[in-house]
Image (cartoon, rainbow, N blue to C red; front, top):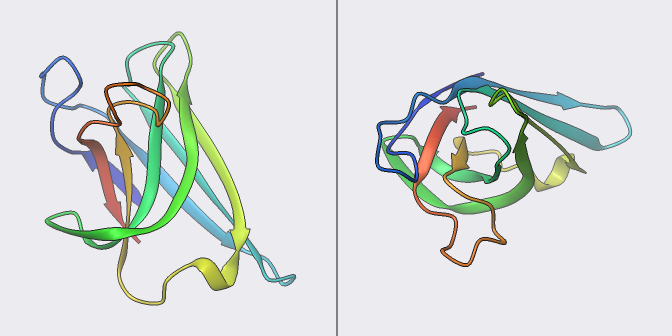
Length: 116
């Protein structure tokens, strides 16, 4: 599924962050959600989660995902393994945020979004 730019970066510029999220379900009851994005600020870390709803109508957080880590070129990746039963059956959206959960300023707004 494609992730498109969404909202503003931490410095208030419009987001250009875009990429892909891939969900793979395995026969052992496990799933892996991989996120790959470009145009992040270099050498940064960003929170990500699955939320109920759509990009235009974000609902509550359904599943917290692993952080997206950007390299020196601003290419970011994340891989989260979780039980398939934790993935909601209703409409869900992958969201990447301005900052990581460890940032004292909080995660900030969404900078990339895509509907599964």
